[in-house]
Image 1: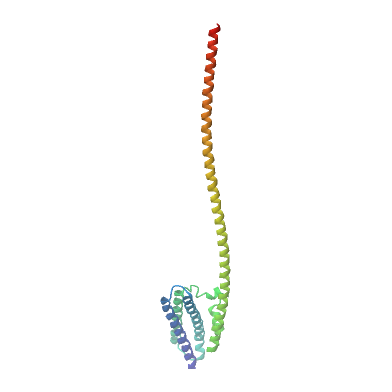
Image 2: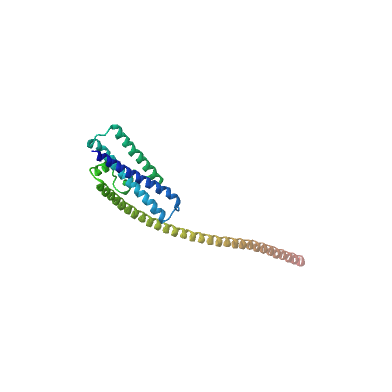
Length: 233
């Protein structure tokens, strides 16, 4: 009967060691460049280990609930182990937050159907160490498939964004061309207006000269008529 308790402690120690590994990887992140293939690979490995850690914590929770039926264990010891799981889960959540895994608690919802903790417990019930490893591999496989679907969606969205960008570039070029035509038309209109103003001034000046000429002719005619009247009368 003591073997069940020892098995639980071994599982917890392995989970704790895994958490320490992730913590070390997070510390090493500061020595890596802000971006790049190596950095992305390092962060992906850390996130994958956090996911495995979560699965092991769910398994530990399931095993802990079955310990009283397999061996005599005090309530105080049960509470102590429950606190151990809670603290380790809290540490995992903090590390997930550091790695920008904001949807860590609901990550399965992003990659596929939502798997509740109760479902994980039921799926890991009665599994030995080899079974748990196989279950973890299956979960990782499902997550990889979900990531592939997510990648396809991202690529499709990227293509749509590129098409929209090309359409915007075309519209921008058309607007620039229209602006050039408007500027050219405005310049022509200003030149026409200047020519009309000059023509108008010339027209007004020609009318004044014509009136002056007619007045002179009229005065001459009157002078001639007056001379004739004086001469013959």
